[in-house]
Image 1: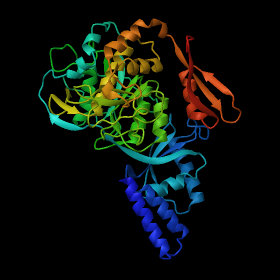
Image 2: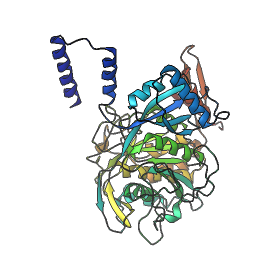
Image 3: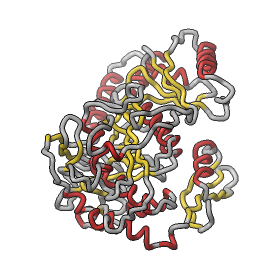
Image 4: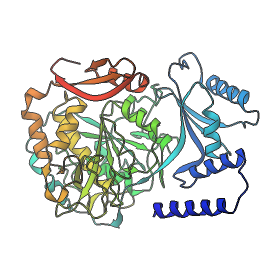
Length: 492
């Protein structure tokens, strides 16, 4: 459809030229360029995100107000017509600010690009919750997906003394007083805010949609995601979570309601990092590519599990983000049905999707009723998150690279999933947990990452995650990341 529209537009242009239309002015050409950006409103109008170059501004020496004043002064020097913008917040770790204005996005973007201290300027993209339907359901034990991924067999392997794993659910909020969730929530009484300052999170997380400490909302979506991961198991009530011994603890991070904004997600990722979350669940997606969001994901010390989407779309041809970012710590999840076929709605992709998990008729905790059922890659994603969390709880020394590989590569190869993902596999928790426990020779193996110098052709190697992230985030103009070169048993 898009190609037909473009051809139609092109024909109109030829018609106008053939009728000797007057030559467009520079202002008209600029407006034409701007209009292309507005063709699809997948962003919040009047809001942009600006990321500063880390070496150009010392956030330890300059306050937020000084940084804002400096930025606006530079703009006024170059454009006397600049308006006083409302700059909402500064996030120190990623050096980014959210700017609100009555001006159009493309005008804001062009102006802020002129500041030499600015690294990236982009819209505050909107992303959607990746569900397919919402049908009220009754309380009960209709959890076919647990048997489908061999979770009940894995329960015989899971250790009573396993470590607790913090899972951040970035969603519409979590009903943290739900009786089947209340005992499996992260304790946020001594939390750090997004700037790594001491704070208090009495309600087990933070709300980046309404900017307060109460991350709950009357939407079923986030509460369903949380219940799939960590509903209390073996309590003679309701449904079961993925971990039999209840080792997964939910950090509730509300990042949206009718849509998910990039600004909310990058703040939430920083919060999750500062408060030792090891896995992030991201059951949302959209077409807007945000380099700032990608860099935030790259900086996360754990794994980031994202939904593939529900348009029966090939994500290799039409990427959905965050699923399709090429970050080394992302797992992208497609959905299967009870017959182990790819769900009719599920997106797929042999490059941009990693693994499949059940996503049709999933029963979980609900906000306005005890339990409900729904379908979508939104609900396949937390099944993979719960599996990864169980693996990590029983193998707390696993680095994130090995955790990711155990999670996606130990599944069942199915003919019905041919060309649907990198692995063409459906999640199998029992296989993954047993493999991670028995392959002891792999438990202390670390990936060695290789970088190539753009100018000299020299190579740089490191097995340290923090060094790797520093080079990717701060030295990308000089060094090109090439991936894992080999594995070593040396400690990080």
